[in-house]
Image (cartoon, rainbow, N blue to C red):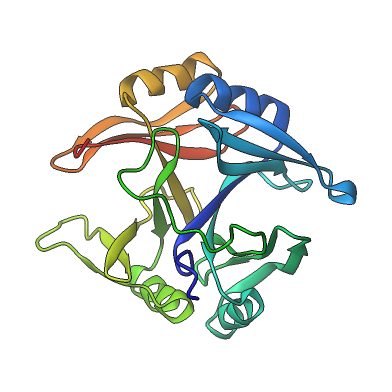
Length: 255
């Protein structure tokens, strides 16, 4: 049976310099709860939950690594995907590894330097399809690549995951929409901030972008881009948690 999660964004993981502070922040801002899982020598892994359902994970960042959200894409064969990444100019940061009974994963960078994870579920629910209907509040709804070379990135991700896509007609920003199985799954744009490295930015659905953005500041975070309307699309802001990890708050115009 074909895994419906293959080629789709299927996990988000916060690597942070302060897991305790980060978990407290996301509980206050997004209402997430946490379940701590003892991983033995690997330490404590924190499952982040919204309305009782897993939405992501949290772990301590390796020494010297800044806090960041890592986006994962589903793969039927993590080892083969990791090999493809290298063949097409990417680099492997963490080789294919099993978390027994749960997942097999690898972490890489694309040729421009944006980090991306590859993941295959190993548990009994690994082939469950994504939830039907509009994304629930408090869940990740969009992933966006900020890169220095859209053409090269487009070719790379097509070769690795089979993604296609296009720029909207007459769009002065040349915003690229990634497509998988003829459905939009994410976006890409040219990096606008000179000092920032290429990266993936994850969007979380909220009911009120202005109120959630204010909560970010109230609980020690920063606003990197204030709330902004996109006609016929929705409203968003880009923020940073107190440990330095950036993410976006989003409300769709369709809900």
